[in-house]
Amino acid sequence: MTDPLVVVAATANDHKLSEMNAVFGDAVELRSRPAGVPEVVENAGTFVGNARLKAMVIARASGQPALADDSGLEVDALGGAPGVESAYFGGGDHDDGANRERVLRELVDTPDTARTARFRTVMVLRWPDGREIVAEGTCEGHIARVETGDQGFGYDPLFVPVEGDGRSFGEHSAAEKNAISHRSRACAALLAAIGTN
Ligand code: IMP
Image (cartoon, rainbow, N blue to C red; front, side, top):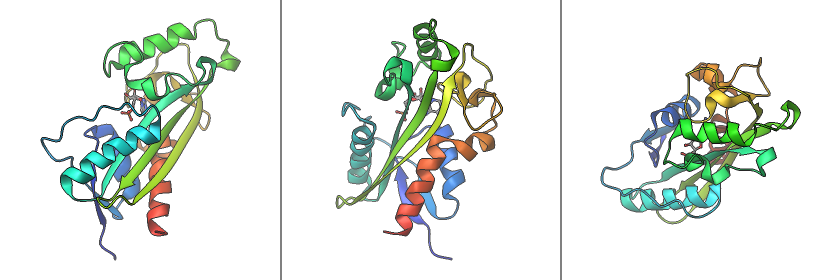
């Protein structure tokens, strides 16, 4: 067996880390973010730009390859919003309840057939010398009219994946979500790219 690639994770979000670890298995060993590294202002305006900003800061601080992801929800009827503003769409900072409320409010007159949406994750694995791998994953679905379930985080209780039985991600176990999620697909794409690098 080859040694795992040791990578420092930019995120401290336990949900994200366990979703990533489930896909990476023994191929990548995720280390936690070094203490004392300041939060990065995510102002690049794109998922890839924000992920790159985070990965660069951690790679520089740790001297090791760093992995950062940036994700969000894109609602077609809202022109792709909340997109890169997903974390603070409702006005607060990572106020998941307020974020979901605003999406529901803005879609109140949108018919069921036009409530299509997707989650998108972009991952940047960046080495201290500036080499990088970019990988992306999406999960298509639609926005429900009411929240259901208490699993996952963020917009999960509103998002009903196409590849499912009508339950929201909030009603999916971690393993069920992992099988089809944007983040696990980005991780799988990243693993494939590492293998060919
Ligand atoms: P981040 O910038 O990758 O942390 O993601 C920004 C925001 O997108 C989060 O605060 C969540 O509101 C939302 N988000 C990202 N991934 C997911 C997911 O898997 N489920 C639900 N919401 C998500």
